[in-house]
Amino acid sequence: MRTRKEPAKTYRSEVAAAVHEMVEGFHSAGLADKQTMREFDAACLSPAPAMTPEEIRAIRERERVSQPVFARYLNVSKNLVSDWERGVKRPGGPALRLLAIVRRNGLRAIA
Image (cartoon, rainbow, N blue to C red):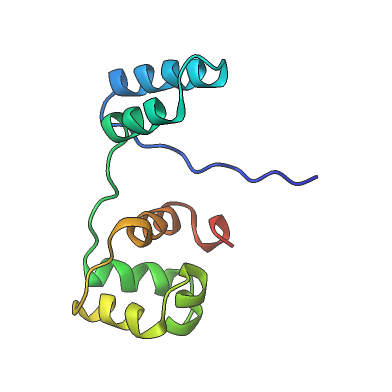
């Protein structure tokens, strides 16, 4: 049976990492509910960093894929990838987080 490796979490500080890990333990033991975990995620985890159009293009080119193929991996349209790379639009939310994962670990991390 194949298990999926969770992406590494990036914390605001070492203290935030320690507190978050402790609350995750509480959650696993049934001592903290999902709402509490969501609040600690928001407080402790750092947001995905913004990316320039050049950085997005560099990630795609490093992975040696076309815009349409890159778009399929990210589950977005090829036009959206083009807009990101031209600076017409900026990725946000889940797309930005996926791009950060691909930048750090390559496309294999989300394949």
